[in-house]
Length: 346
Image 1 (tube, rainbow, N blue to C red):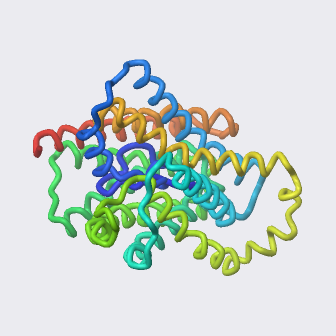
Image 2: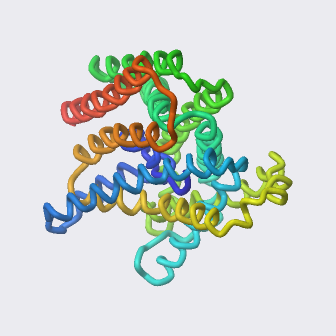
């Protein structure tokens, strides 16, 4: 999913955000320093914009990869990221947003993060081609479990019983969902498990390198837009290399899809939506707060999963639907448990 959000601690909102570059710490500081008047209507509008953009991004990616049967996930990622670079660079030049200059020092520090970032996006594309949206959403919960274990070993961070209970429920729901999945695809599940490990690694690596990255910037800061520009710019040469390694060039040369204007329109829309997630999530967070943002991000997965089943005519059963709902509710329980833990430790 294109130009995603960076959550250094937990992928607590929508997973599309994780793949679009939102830094929770930066956002929290932005909220504390913001003097903007909170308008209820604007909070509702920003929340709707965030939910619609994050849901639409995943559904459109699924549409391109499955309905169009486009067998070049890396190329799709590359095109989306190119659009993000183009838009962010244009807005930066126009003075609408501020971004850090991409110096060699910063690029060198960021390369390890970016390699994981690209792997995360590509495996997400590969899994989405084979697995229905609802099951992808439930399986992504496994990322939280891996992140929790990683935080224990790398940062000596301990979690309370409510968090572990939520994580346990997530594992159970993922296993039950897989067993009862009528459209089970081993290749898709394999890519999704790899994606969970890469997403957790991305979050943990980001936490370790963020301070170093800030030290080599001119302002000593690294905001949301700078990270979107940094991640997506670095992903372009790596993406081009991977297109040749995975022999997508031959496929692109032969496929009739690239001669369809409607296909290019959908691809371009997906690129705009990827960036829209970053903009709308920042806007929503400014208008509300971390608590509302986190809970809405978790609740947002429920209509997304329903839409994925209905729009793509996914064959399902009562057992599988129950497992999916169980997993989604476990995600909401997890978000609440994390927020309570944070409020107690703060």
